[in-house]
Image 1: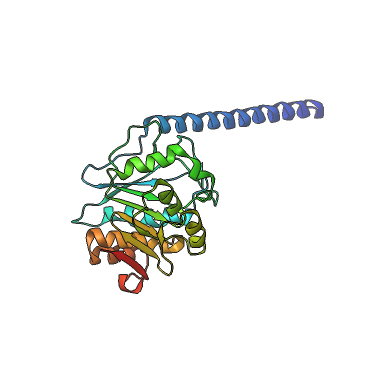
Image 2: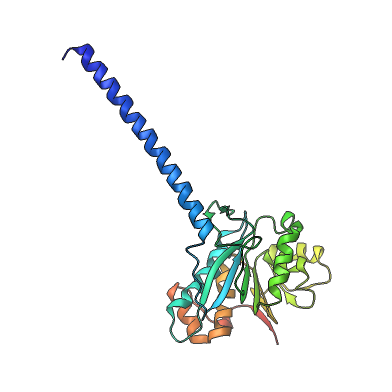
Length: 256
């Protein structure tokens, strides 16, 4: 084979491989989109055990990782404990599209509270999000959703600035609450009639549990676990996540 012919063969082969590679990428992208749409349409991954508490995590763009994942981990691990009414945990948002947390993780919500038929929610968890002190509080659909769930839920819990959402709904009007330590003064300024406490990591008043957030979101979730299941189960859940748990050692306030 001459050098010219050899060069032509190599060039044609290269173009063929390049075309196939690009075509493969396009097919892979199309397949991913189809699979994503199939999951969003069918909600195939959301299977709720009817004998468990339904625990919904309200998420949106800007949700902070820790305030979401800390209580999520604690509550999800209840399925590995025997002899208790464990928890179905799932995320809920106002969209079927992925949301992006403040730290950049992309999450596909399990349910859309605007368009989906929702199960009875026993516990609503409101993690903190980037705009819970401003634009999120103007989202009337979201605020109305929280009010609606409050009518049937056994507990409503917030972490960090999630308390601002509860305050905006009016659910904290007659209860004691707390929030992220450096935002307490801001919350008092925005909601001057509320009883907002400092120097505690969480407050439990009636059906509402408000938490300082951050890594201390674990403590608030462990407290609710102890409230529902007892001290031994709470200690077991903590041990599974290598957390030292003793309610007596955590600054908190329980309104009887």
